[in-house]
Image (cartoon, rainbow, N blue to C red):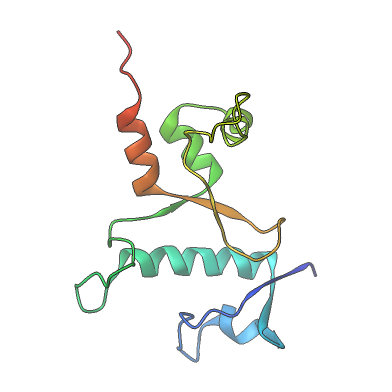
Length: 132
């Protein structure tokens, strides 16, 4: 079984019947999760971002309507291929920063899964010129 190490997250659900949390193995200050469990955790975090218990968005927290988009969802939303999306993430030839929204890494390693914040993607779409 393949595992990935990610920083310890205090926001994990505390329910005793959560299969993802019960299968997680502790190792110093990291959680060891299988690829399936990491995907489940990403879905749990997406749900947590969309759902606020008290209805107030704490400072520094994303608004309740923010979702974390997978590459397939992002490609459909912006109308670009996966390869074009990753190309747009590279620095520009003149050394400038890319204008495409940066992905959010779900783990500490460079090989960890990434997602894109829906609010940043929507803001990027609004800045695009409309076709004539």
